[in-house]
Length: 116
Image (cartoon, rainbow, N blue to C red; front, side, top):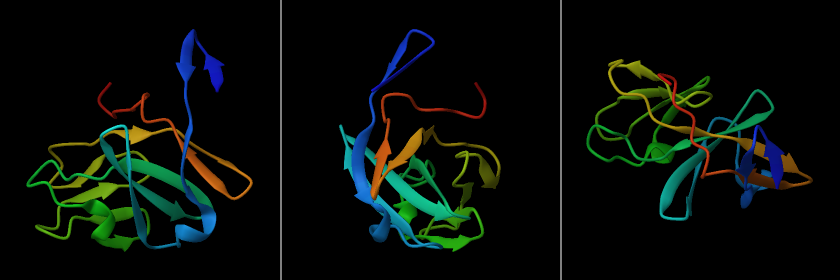
């Protein structure tokens, strides 16, 4: 646990580093939240795994650098921030990530939104 600004951050193991390949997504479910984990440029990122358009599972989508495309209708999101790239109308939450040894930990209780 990390205490910062009077808020409790609870990181939970979601995967190991060997499970999340560069250029591919990895899906996990934590506390009723579906998240996608991504490995980009040596760092790990977590975003909501459900596309706000029609509910597609983003971790099954195509990756281009740090952008994942929904496999259903090609909506695109920046995996580093959750910001919508196309069509640009709806961003999704991103989550704090840290790596301890080979474990990837995510705090799903502290979602970040670009428009906050």
